Length: 123
Ligand SMILES: [Mg+2]
Image 1: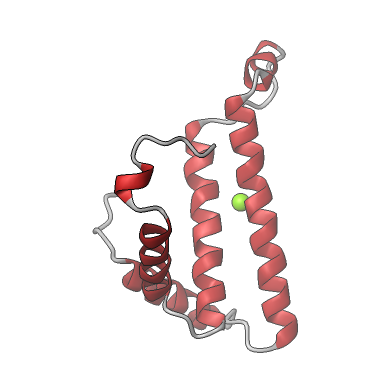
Image 2: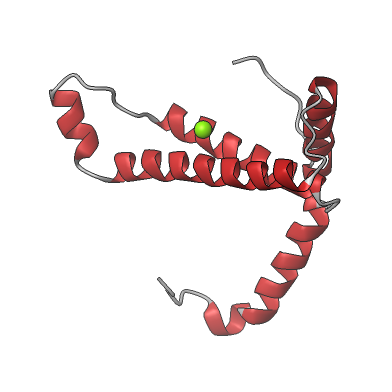
């Protein structure tokens, strides 16, 4: 894989916007935004499939049967697909993912202060 420069979230969002604009794929109306959301859910499903595969006995069984075996590389690609769709939705609605992330982390830190939640497993 060619080495790529380190990117901020803001740069990633701008890069995706350029990619969409160059191809005329920016979602401009309700139907296209709905489609983008549905496609994002499809990509999330593909990510879930890879994780289910990696975390279950299924991979071993499929390897024994010479079926397709999903790998860590598939996880990387599906995470990228989900991330691109999050960025695309943010662009479609004029939201900065950087600001969204910062607000969410501030909310999480207020909700789960370190002094009360350190080493407490909530799962
Ligand atoms: Mg995918």
